[in-house]
Image 1 (cartoon, rainbow, N blue to C red):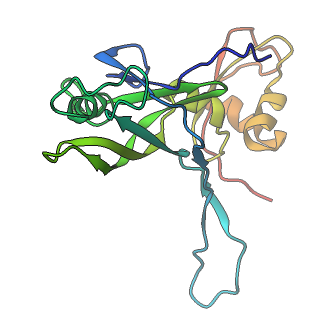
Image 2: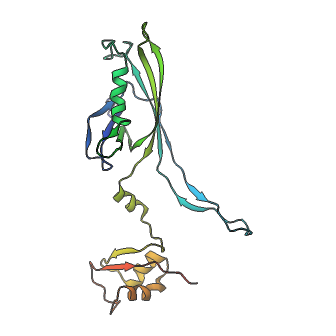
Image 3: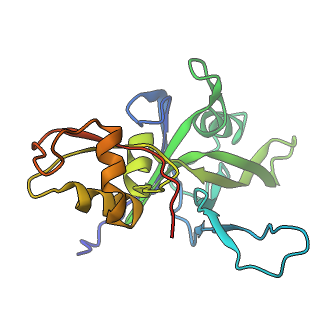
Length: 229
């Protein structure tokens, strides 16, 4: 439930993809909250087929990380409370601070920082893809006083979370599963391969003397199996 309290959008820079090591002075709060932001999602398919064959259904390849687009306003004209013209460099210092968070390379990782963007129900984690700066207003000496920074980010998911979300049960991969209460080898085989009839091959691969007496906590390897009809 909304409390009516004004919250500003915040961007935080991190050195690692676990989002635990903050960049020094690595927080940026917007002057004005955005009027909009855009999240883009894609699904990739392959339409490859053998020469001389008839058309086939596109096959799912993957869902790449989402893209996030957002504009930031920088202003030192004095029209925004707290943002006066005291700096002789106009918005240059503000822009440099922002770039240190979202654009500059991490000395340890030798790659751009990871960023977390939070505002209301939005919590986005990723890295910068593109950034363009449009200067819109200048002082008499040409010092930029206002600019709009357009950014595009690529989503980033921690490796362990990615694996958990995908839960990839492809029969082409080797899987290790831990036996839980109530598990049977045919049931576990069905979950991996979509068919329980391969349980004897799994038992052979694990050198199980009695596949009917699995122990809770026991690890079972499910190797790649060539399916037969």
